[in-house]
Amino acid sequence: MKSTGIVRKIDELGRVVLPMELRNKLKIKEKDPIEIYVDGSSIVLRKFEPNCTFCGNAKNLISYKDRLVCDKCLHTMLQISEENKNGK
Picture 1 (cartoon, rainbow, N blue to C red):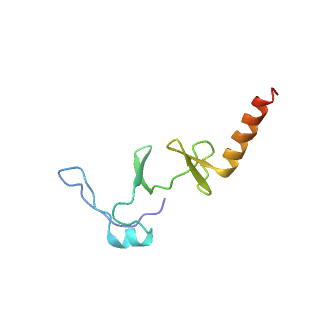
Picture 2 (tube, rainbow, N blue to C red):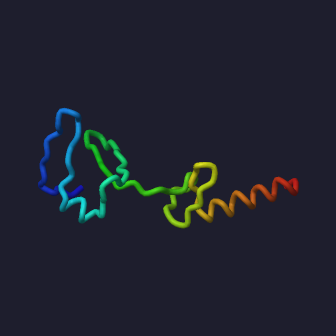
Picture 3 (tube, rainbow, N blue to C red):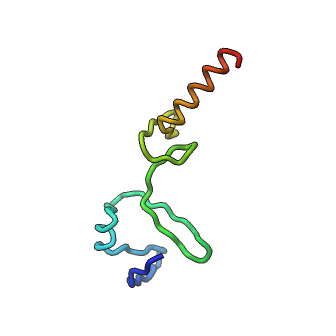
């Protein structure tokens, strides 16, 4: 992990401000969702990118019943469904 040298204090409501230079560099805009991870004693913030429920792929996503599925997993599910219909 690379240090930015930026230090910020947490306010009384538990918030921390990400500097504009960092937000611009990472293309984070106001209201963008941010994921929060814990890695040992570190807190990692990452810009949220939607991904496939099954494989984690972030490309060619289709929404189905409030779940995101990539075209490859959708194709696999259709094959399995067709095999089940045919009694295989």
